[in-house]
Amino acid sequence: MFPLGTRTKREVIESARQMEWLDVTEKKESQDFVDGGNHNPLFGSCSAKPGPILDTKGQMLGTHPGIIHYTIGQRKGLRLGGSPKPLYVVRIDESENAVIVGPREDLFRKHLLITDVNWIAVASPPSAPMRVKTRIRQQHQEAPATILPPAPDAAGTVELIFDQPQLAITPGQMAVFYDTDMVVGGGTIVKTMI
Image 1 (cartoon, rainbow, N blue to C red):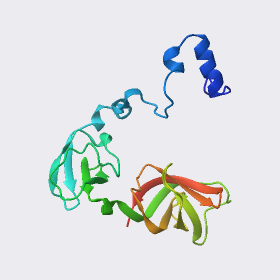
Image 2 (image 1 turned 60 degrees about the horizontal axis):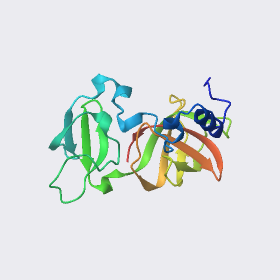
Image 3 (image 1 turned 120 degrees about the vertical axis):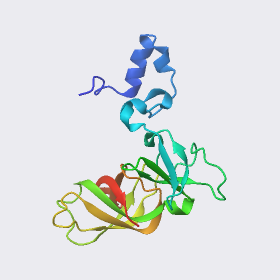
């Protein structure tokens, strides 16, 4: 239960204005929940260990200050030079504490694994392949895809195959399935496969 849960944003801003909390009322709109962009406190000190930046063949190109500073598709802030093509983060290997980079074309994938699936508009997981449109992040345009029925031992997990490869599918993000404008369900992306 949040203390402002029953109040609108406009009401809260007006209350802050009446209390002369100008640093709140004059602040630019933002969805950031960590002020200043420093997300380190969210992860703890053990997550910010330096490690290697590797190309997709495993060659070391540099080092990073911690994998928490990177996301799939990121190009800026890699501090790498000398490549004939711009490099992007294509994968983060937590077990090796490595950031893997490659050209933009290495960011495209079609096949992904989604877990913790919640079915909203259907009573149960599909027993046959299901056609949907799927969104993999807020700014992503839904794209046609097929949900494969879950394996008997994989409750709450499905595989999804897009008709066309999609850019920067990121484990940890949500995938939401649509039938026209109705939300069929959604879950957490845990892995890309192809």
